[in-house]
Length: 86
Image (cartoon, rainbow, N blue to C red):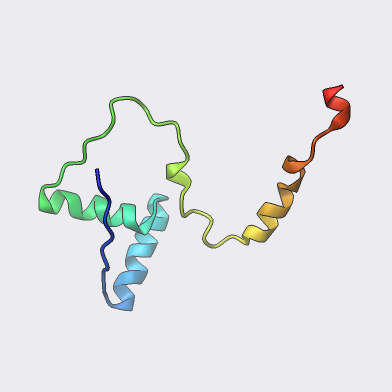
């Protein structure tokens, strides 16, 4: 399935409202717009029959967080504990 981009222009009040809606739902603005628009246009997304085991639901959730601090706390992940591997 091919994916395409669509530009959407709207008043600032509308943009703020859709961002608040997506934040409340814990989804991206893109996912929120799809959720709202799909039933109106009669579009049915075909979901996989097997459960998804990924982090998609967390995408876009860190936009207001200082990611520098998050990345610095994970720096130890790149260090090998030599004693542990003897």
